[in-house]
Image 1 (cartoon, one colour):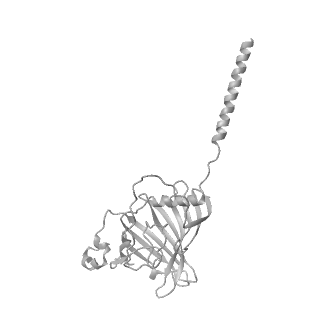
Image 2 (image 1 turned 45 degrees about the horizontal axis):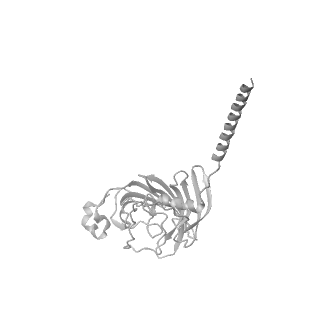
Image 3 (image 1 turned 60 degrees about the horizontal axis):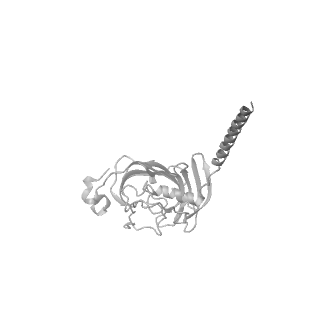
Length: 286
């Protein structure tokens, strides 16, 4: 019957057309999306790191320092363990050294900082912050880190002005960036970053630092720094340092481990005033 043949032809044409249309839609959906530029990627990594700040107001931790002699043997005389009670807004800290016999030494006041004549730290240090212009005096009080303001609008910052990204590689579940400072390489210390490819949280970095020799020259150091998330805060767990620039003394290779990190709600005010230590010997923390 002619009308039946026409109906079947019409149905076949409709099915073929619908199938072709579905293929066309699928092809459009498969078009790749543009990727982030290297500079935008670095800005996003920095913004992700800064989104966890400011750090907790107080931290307590143990830093274990180990180094080798210039012959490659363990340097026990210059390896030690320090207990640290730290206040973040001004970098003030009470420290006590643990002896080889397990005793705890006298109280002393420090300001743990990178690129200074002191042990690096704290575990929550802002690694994107430029190093200070000069070696800080012991009584230096830095500008307090501001609290995060309320979100009024979303503003997308384009570009990164301190560093130029020279290479971006995908290594498993990590992204590896190589950086070159655009200016002031002594202050802009970052050289390499490894971040979680999914979250952009820091996992490892390479940065420059300095070794301050008493009554002597200052030598360049290269630090490899490892991170872990602790209570949703990126924290330093290990630092491996190598001194170069012609240095041939003890401590060419040094390692720091940060352990027993705690974020207490508060610490006594006198911990951060060395003039009060003599009045609180019986209350000294261990």
